[in-house]
Image (cartoon, rainbow, N blue to C red; front, side):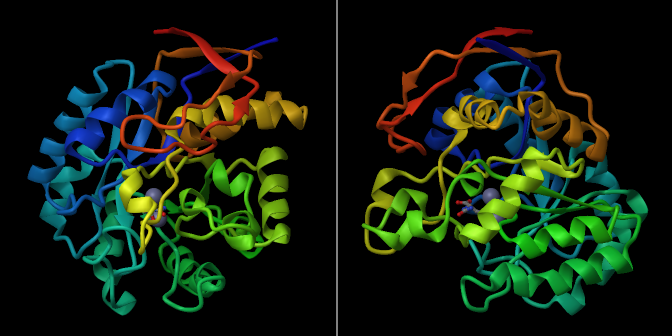
Length: 333
Ligand code: NCD
Ligand code: ZN
Ligand code: ZN
């Protein structure tokens, strides 16, 4: 069997810097027409200058002019002049609560103080991308953050807001309440519950933020994605960490899924007999919500099994050693 898709997009991607960037950028560029590049570098991307330098590094590392990096800025209080300067160079600004995930120490500690910048973003129509977790009990963090999503969506009704890597059934309700809100869903959160992470022997390579939740939450996410919700976008949250940072005491959070994401999604959608909905999830919904038109890049896949390698360089991928029933066979640019 064959399947082809025009301009697949990964709307949430970590590409890192230096050697890691060199290793992972080509892997995303090989399958995707574009990706939203997250700004949580060791020194966060929070100025026009850092943004330009990082964008150039990404373009150079990707080495593929059919891959568009959609850059993001790390949320901090910005002036109107700063926002006007970067506006045409970014797809949005990414907000991290302080200390909640990898390299987010410089994030927001006081949500009462963000209104001014968010109002400017609404005025300038700069989307707000959010890692939505409180600092409460790990299984309740996303639910506890929903009040902040509701406050943002209600107070800034013309601001496009993206709830990143959502994991609970309750979070989906917000999509029905507010037309200005969209959500990304990862591949791994479409497949895992907490049981897969810590129910048997502990699996550090499945440990990520937000942590995978309950069977009920998994089912709700699957239902929403496979039924083709128009404001749910694919974002892999592929987040590479070297094996030594995962297989140790104090395991880093993040699942590296970039090289398997597209073929595995095709496998999942095919198994549900929903291949006709995949283009909405991996490109059309994102194009509509963000007003972007990537490509041209057509990716051809075939139902031909392959075994995921144990490692790409220093990183162990999601589904390492497992068989995936589909593979990318050709790219037309
Ligand atoms: C991400 C990373 O490693 O940068 N980790 C993760 O577990 N998802 C950060 C993030 O997306 O929260
Ligand atoms: Zn995050
Ligand atoms: Zn992320």
